[in-house]
Structure formats: C-alpha cells, structure tokens
Amino acid sequence: MTVSLSAWWLPLLAIPVLLLGEYLHRKIKALGRYNIPVPVVGGLTLCIALLVLDGLGLVSLGFQTKVSAGWWTWLVTPEPEWTGRPEKGVNLPFLIGFFTCIGLNATWSVVRKGSWQVPLFLGLASLLAVFQNALGVGLAKLMGESPLLGLICGSITQTGGHGTALGFAETLERAGFQSAATVGAAAATFGLICGSIIGGPIGGRLIRKYNLSPAKDGPIAEAKAEKAESALVEVAKHEPGIFSGIRAFAGQGRKAVGHMLLLALLIKIGAWASWGLQQAGFVFPAYMGALLAGLVIRNVLEGLGKTWIDSHVVDLMGGLLLGIFLSMAMMSLNLKELASSAVPMLVILAVQVAMVALFTTFVTFRLMGSDYDAAVMASGHCGFAHGATPSAIANMDSVTHKFGPAHRAFIVVPMVGGMFIDVTNSLIITWFINYLKI
Image (cartoon, rainbow, N blue to C red; front, side, top):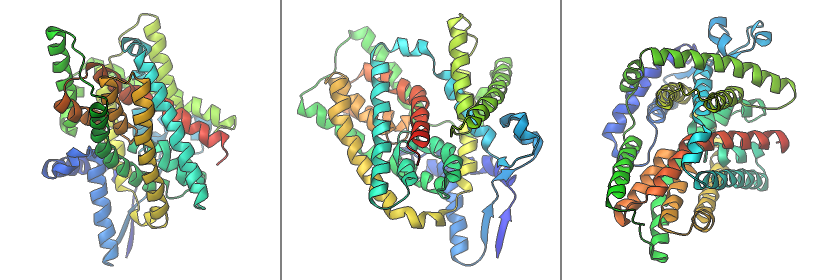
C-alpha cells in the first residue's frame, strides 16, 4: 500500500521531530561527539523508520513537499509569478529566512575586529571551497557520473553542510539531478563525521612536529580569553532545545517583533531580486536575493551609524528557522534514492577528506602564521570545511585542552565559519552552476 501525505504534515511534524532529535542526542553520546545536528537526527530517524516499513512490505509512506496556497507562498514569490499560484516548497519560507539572517549578521565591523587574519582566513576557506568543487566535478566526470554529483559532494555539502545542501537541492533538481536532496543530506552527514575525526590529529601533529607552544598575553588577559573560549565551546557543544530557543526569542519582546518584520520585508525584497536575476538568465538558489539584501541593508545601516539590528536576536531567529527547515527537509527524504549514487559519492568524499587534510596542513597552517594558533586554526578549518562550525570549535577545544589556549584561533575561526563562509560559498557554488554549464 502506498500513501502520499499532504505537504502540510511537514510543518505540523517539525516540532515533534525536533524533540525526537533532542531526546536521541541526550541518549546517544556519539551524536554529540560528532556534532550531528538535532534536526538531522530526528528527521533521519523518521526516514529510516519509513524505509523499514516499506522494506517489510507494510506501507510505502511519503510526503508531498510543495504547496500552492497563495497565503503561504506570497512572501517568497514576486507578484508576476505569484498570480499564477505556482507550487513552492512548503519549507521555503524557513530556508530563505535562515539565509537572510546569515546576510544580516555578515557585518564589516565584525571583520575589522578580527584584524587582517579574518579576511585572510576567509580567503583561504573560500579558496578551499573552490578546490572542493573543482575536485568533485572532475572526479565525477572521470567516473562517468553527472558533474552535479561532484558539485553536491563539493563545497555544497562539505563547506556548506546540511543547510546549504538542502538550500541548493531544488536548483540542482531542476538542472537534472533528481536525488539532490537525499544525496546532499548523506554527503553532509559523512562530512560532519570526518571533519570531527581528522581535525584534532592534524592540529596535534603540527604542534608536536614544530614544537609549538601557546603565546602568553599576561595573566589577566589570558584569564579573560580562556573564560570567553570556555563559554564559546559550551555554546557549540550544547545546542539549545527548540522550546528554550523559542522562549529566548520571545523574551526579546518588541525587539523580536521588529526583527521579524524586518526579516519579512527582506525576504520579499529578496524574492524580487532573485526573480530579476533569473529573468536575466542566471541560475540562483531561491534564497540568494534575500541573503544579499540582508547583507546590504545591515552594512548600509551600520555605515550610517544605525545599530538597532541586534546580532544576538538575529542568531536566535536564524537558529529557530534553520531547525524547523532542516527537520522538514530531512523527514521528506527518500533514502532509496541513495542506491544509485552511493559508491561514486563515497569515492569523491574520501578524496575530499584527504584534500582537506593536505590543504589545512600545508596551506592554512603556513599562511596563518605557522605558529601555535595557526595549528589550532588548521584543526578548526577541518571542522567547518566538512560542514559545521561547532565541529571546528570542538576540534580546537580538544587540541587546546591538551596543549594550551589559542586565543586568536577562537576569535578568527568562529567569525569566518559562523558568519561569512556561507555568503562566499553560496556565491562560489552559484558561479560553478552558471559558468561551468553543468
């Protein structure tokens, strides 16, 4: 028996799936060790359960993913398109909202606080994203596979992670790779595990090989920096639950309402911007216009001395949107689609892991100063080059716990991995899609 559930079940089940993921995170310690996101845990658990039911011949259960209700699609659709009541992904507003928050927090003032090392590290991270795409596409062609598979196993899932993978899925499906969402989710999960495994050993090897030691900034400055690092690590390791996130955001009161209204305005502006770019012949993911709108508005306001946009509130809002989007996207995956791409996907990803290890050892470490902090940054780069800033911070924490504090690394890596790399990576991926004609 085959049953196709309405797409409206996805938002209805989003919170229960997140709660399931939180429960499993508490019970299975390895999930936290490898920084597997809570929505991924909950969504994949449901997908596996549905796959088992199908395999046993009991029921083949799946979700529709698109809706045409005008009240739901208006915000993410420009009027010339919206009047035709097109079908849109039911999770699209959450996806675009999350990437808009990324744009809102990508401020030039933050870059300047990290001195010259932040733009340098961002440049290296972006260069690695280019290499990941070139390597993935090249290997896919050598194996006779679609170059889109190589792109999915490149910076889309490795530097980008689950959010970027599922954000580009619809674009890649339109380009001809129908299992983009499922393969992307699998590749991103593989990357999270590998990034958590290789980062610590690489950082430790560099420290021992070159006999490096932490720089001393004086007892007072060092104590403050260590306290800040400890707080950052705790935030990264203990992802807040969905209800605590909602309470924290609601606790902002009028400020939360103001930021929500701004977000809605930017999403609508972004819908028009993306539509205009698509009419000009460019292939862009649905969220690109809103991301760029958020980036421009935030930096223009700050340039004018208007600082009422609160990065903490934007972070809370973005975290909630990402959690709901990921849970909806993951539970709608069809795991049977993995079969045809499993072997070439694993080959490409294995080579990607080796390339990241070499890049962070011989490029990141050397260009970031070849000192103790540079070695710690190399371990962190392994983490978010395979999909997650929490993995980067966990890698650095494991190294510094053994060898000593690295204050500069804990400033630079979270700034780049948590705020800026998603912007440059999205532009790099879009360039590959448009100009390599794949």
